[in-house]
Image (cartoon, rainbow, N blue to C red; front, side, top):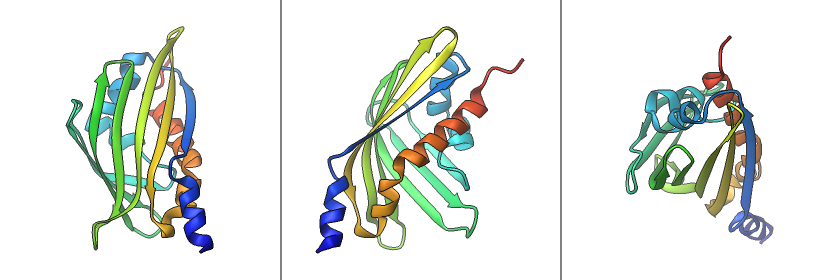
Length: 162
């Protein structure tokens, strides 16, 4: 009973994370829609992406295979792009799932906005939680940490180099 109540507590919640990145808006936006660049920064510290696909158009597919470095466990994600307004906004649904039985672990709608700030880019990610399996409640509650780490990695991979 407590687990169900706790699980329900995240559904319908919004998580917001922002990062000012020292790179032009077009470069930062491109790092979200170019699969090779997406693979460099997606996910929290301690994860590597072995496969990244994104079709940056409404109805386009999103597919990412994150591997946890510590134990090699795969965390796949699939989804669909809902809106692309280059270079200012990207919206997609993302569903993490268990590959053994295709059951959803966490599903959310991700809205990323990109605002030019004197040659830098303010990236803001709004995650609206749609579904969380009980076993992934703790992970859902730490999404802000994971996204903060992802945006730090995005900043490192796109930063202006002197």
